[in-house]
Image (cartoon, rainbow, N blue to C red; front, side, top):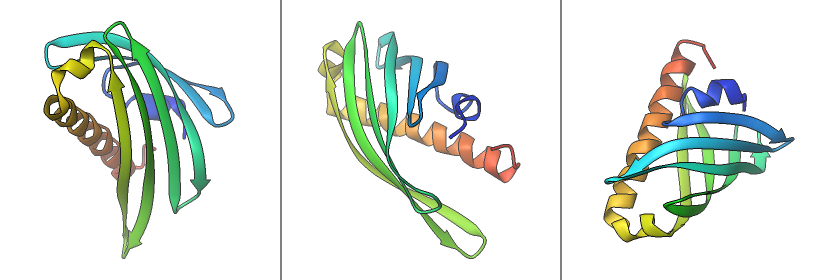
Length: 128
């Protein structure tokens, strides 16, 4: 939940800072297919049960489109490991939506994998 630490793992993140008790503002430079742009948005924590559940709402927009997403991260412990399970839904609008669900889903999956891989490496090295 520390903006400086999370910023380092958010792909394309140029700015990520707290803007309220459970809200963060962000600026990211990302590309979907051949469409690249800068997006401004907010991440709001909607549910927080430490060591169990984290609910999030993400809203953002840029010249190429917009995003509204909701999701939940579940933390499941087994032996000496913690597994993160995530689920969510997103709605994309604007020119970026013309890329199609397949391209958008593949890009989202890649960005999510990059984020969680970075986070895992920092946790393993006790940097988070």
